[in-house]
Image 1 (cartoon, rainbow, N blue to C red):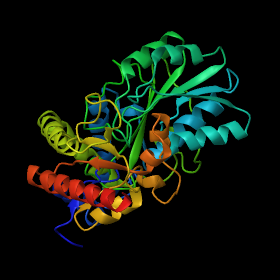
Image 2: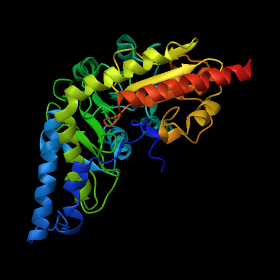
Image 3: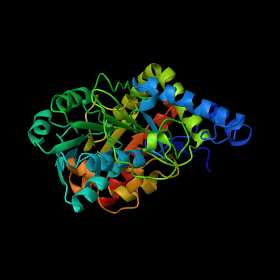
Length: 386
């Protein structure tokens, strides 16, 4: 791998922090027990580590440890939340409300439920990517059982008003789920204050390992019912069977612990780097910022370039910077970003967009190098098309 290549794709994934890896390693070899094996010391050690990790994650979002259900990642957590509520509350209604700019891990389960007879309302967003709370309120019906709105968008970084949405759902006794895969450890999250009933999380967006996530499931005021989607040994209160992956769980907790400790200074630093990048890119004519200028993740910048071929732009930058034009989960598709289309961007602009995910290890010098490379490449491509 070219060590000179600058990594600006932190919304796709992040490297495992060395301190996270150090915390994980003993549980691959020395403390390898199954946390469900409670008849000997190997199992007790693993169980204690899982218990501690559960407490760390719960404290990070102001939940109780019993409300944390470990999963293989945010995609599984989203599926468990959406399908689990649909099945458990089917007697109460068959209507779900979500947003057009959600991750495919929310949209696809909703579309699957539509094939089974559920009705789903896909709310539009305003030009800045935020939902209209009045439209959300108008979309709610007597048969609505779930509202799913992500905390932070994976492409444009926009932060939705969770507390306002939660208050609306709580007042109408509707389950509120949020996909917080991009938000955990980067912005403050409080499931009690925001009246969130279900929250999906993952480790690998926060310098933790891939393959581990969690779902917060509220146990009181109200107690949320879920139908399990995986059946087997009855682990995780019967909601997610399967042997717990202790090393990953330990790493997840350590990543969250570090993220919380660094959150305030890192948010300030990343916001400054984002603004530094935007100030330079915005000197180009016909350049457009996608999403709200300030109500977004500190390290996110999504920009569209007029009169530029998107694939040619990425190819022209590939020796300098690693980034993407949208979600890593949809990078092989040839259709324009559904998120940018929902903002009202034309197909050509949606194709000619770059998502900059600035991370913990990026520097101001790297930002300047990337800005210069983008500006030079855009100008060169525009000369070709003239």
